[in-house]
Image 1 (cartoon, rainbow, N blue to C red):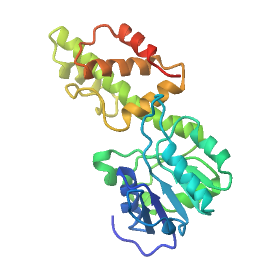
Image 2: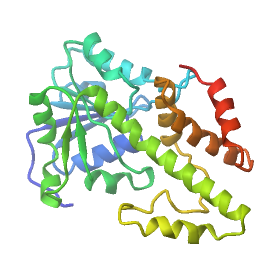
Image 3: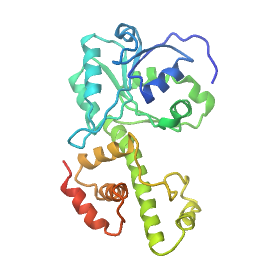
Image 4: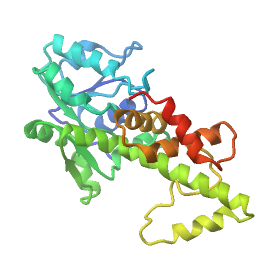
Amino acid sequence: MSNEQESNFRVGIVGLGSVGSAVKHALSFYHHCAGYDIKGIGLWSDILETDVAFITVSTPEGSDGRLDCSAVDTVLSRLNDSRYSGVCVIKSTVGVGYTDTAVKHFPALRIIYMPEFLREKSNFTWFVNPDRIVVSGDDHDIGVVLALFTWVDELNESVPVLRMSHIEAEIGKLAHNARIAVLVSFTNEMEQISQEHGADPNQVMSIIHADRRVKSKEHLRSGRGPYGGKCVPKDTRELINASHHTSLLNAAESVNDCLLNGKAIFNVEAAISQSAEKRTC
């Protein structure tokens, strides 16, 4: 990735964690960027001078099992009070239905939802080399935002730009992480069954890896333990607690909980029942 000629775009990034730092680093190669974080980094006045503001604050799991989007609320409210006229791009992972509610609550703001699909340990590399761009909102504002990513077409013309409704983008982002939860739990259960019968789990899983319909072995490798991290557990629970039709996700979480607690997984039905009892819908 090389420096390009100066751009007329002014870009703000609010929240300089794993995602925000990657966004700022990458876009700084092409555009004038200003960063701001409540930890004392940057000036809010600089954000108000930008054409596009990316919101990359954290949305942890709340006490009700849903994503706590209060930090996003705070940023949008502050932009609204400051009469910000640029495009507000929410990159934080938000709960099901959040963006439509935000659009109604802040009608003066130009809100776009553009979830990120990067790996925390490779945040910069994955941001500059996306395998897809998902975006929802007003067509004109989407065009403004996509114009910032000039290098994507230069690197790979096959990167799909997936335009959809806010609710579809929200569920799609959560489903992406929930699928990881399902695959990891499936793999761990196959490992338990293999060990119960004296089989090598790596040999068992090699049969699945060889299937032409399985494009990636990621999350289907035995011996790597339960899923964890900042995103997969909380995003999976957001979907579980956003619907009454999540038997599969409950099963995946139950398998994972058993592994985390050091228990053998031979009675998943009982674990699912226990998990359902503690659900908040």
